[in-house]
Length: 182
Image (tube, rainbow, N blue to C red; front, side, top):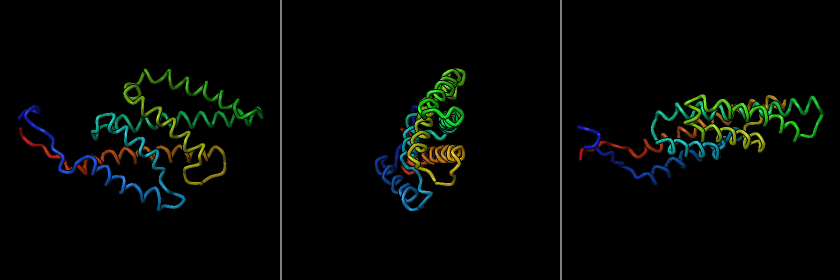
């Protein structure tokens, strides 16, 4: 049969699947103490899964794009720390220098990558989610060295993003889709 003669039917409606997925995710954000998952990051990437078509192969776009965005922000913050430490300047000076270097580099690089172009939303969400995790201290407190704090924030942000993709995938699985002939 052709694809036009088949229809995907959800055995459990998407609203119920979303509810079940949130119930599944909540303990990760509430019961792990210092390692509570940063669910707002997870939920942002969960939405990306749907924006990109709610198909398992979206990981090929989301994973590298989100990580590149988070890595860019991590390099931005590391540069800021380096500049401020070297110059003894106001923190804003390092942030501006880091912005000029890393955000500009990212924007020049992106058009040369089909993955990053397709995953533009994921790139900028990775960047923004890293900044959120870093500036709010929303990840585990595993280091005090400012550069190690950046590395921990990058790893944590990236892992939370990947878990968010998993939640999107789980949402569809929980609808128990089946193909029916028309």
